[in-house]
Length: 596
Ligand SMILES: [Zn+2]
Image (cartoon, rainbow, N blue to C red; front, side):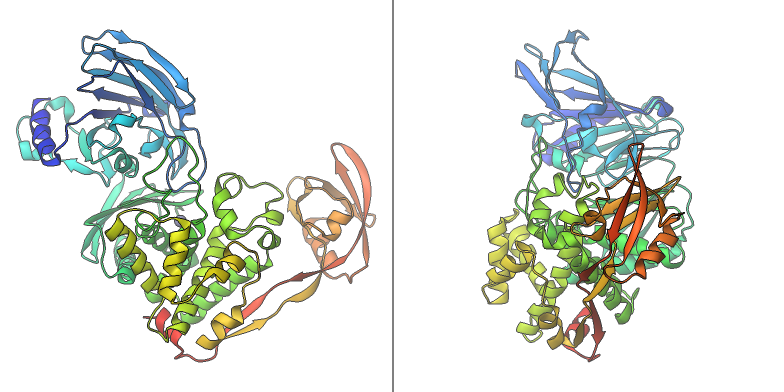
């Protein structure tokens, strides 16, 4: 279209480089769940060109094989003549484009998995996480370009953090058929895939906080109250910005999917996507929603800008391994609670109770003694994102142990510097040094060195014992000088060691290594028919074994693969590390800092 091209040439001049790829995204039949993608290629001087689709999307550390949803990849030259397209690898297609300066690639994307990282399209809305929808070429990755969105006629809105090209600036020449069509500029492919697009009839509202305009695009019916969200989300934004002293964005977008089965969020540079239960906006669930807002918002610094060197620029073809997800996700999880305390959503006691639960989950999990949090980070791709029935025995989540390590480091920095330094200060140093200064991510060694430098002490033992090692963290050492009393409540419990699942039949869901259940030969998946000669339900069996002494026995009647058998289970003791935290000095430095 003429006006579009004129305006576009002007914008190209502003952006200096020539445009190579222009994407067109349409959705002619939303109920078919197919997006149609067209890519215009100009200034071609290659004989062949490889087009690829990422196998994963940043922030979600699992190879999802997005190419499985692509069909009918075709190409034509400027005269409409078909070009040969050959599949090269699972996520790459080669177009034979010899002798043509411009050509077009077409394909369709099946989009029927609603999550924060997968594409979705039905008659209520469309959601486009770019990595799962837009192909790229290596020689255009760093080029700016345009994506033109053609919403279905029943959809009135497009919400994305990408910069729109405003047709009104070129008034009066828009083609009627293009009404509702919106075009956006991206500066490179990374920005395109880091800016999800919501298309539908979502409700949008905005608020200003920390000098930044924030838009909230709400898909789905829900019990939210706009003035309340404007006020409360602004408090979170202000608290997060206060950690760093300034906010790097001028505009920020929250895309919220209000659904029955909310799944959490995904962070981006200047937007995020939240998937929440539609009734999350009242009562105790509301703090959970605000906590998710705080988590994803803090990520706009920690992981999107302050980051391991492997996490941007990205290799979209394969896993990007880092041992630092405990910093990216764990420290973010520490802050998502701390920001709620600072913003007035928690009392000191509520915050402390949350930290205590986190500590007890971490230290009480058998996997905490098996998998160091650095290994948990590295293996996120094959373990955290692919849990199985044995994960509790062998894995530790980098979110939880990382959050606890964040709290411990914070306390230690304040203690050692007599309140002159803190984790806030260390995050600022990383931001200044690597994001604004070197403009890159850091290696694991650089991160450890930066912490030692900031702390003024060789921190190798900390990393050896608690990050690359699995030792129980000495909470007394870190918290007691800071006005918190730490009581070790580790006790020896009589424990069966199998978690049960009540459904049509009573089944064993997990078996703890070394437990009475394991010794008795009980497997995950076994059906429990009876105990000591009588049929039994989940609650009754749990009550029964919780009240037994060590050595007491239960005779269980079980079924496995259709065969019935008995197992004699002798109860055993199990030492589960547990701690309690109490405030001893309400004016102690750690509490004062937490509430700054
Ligand atoms: Zn996160």
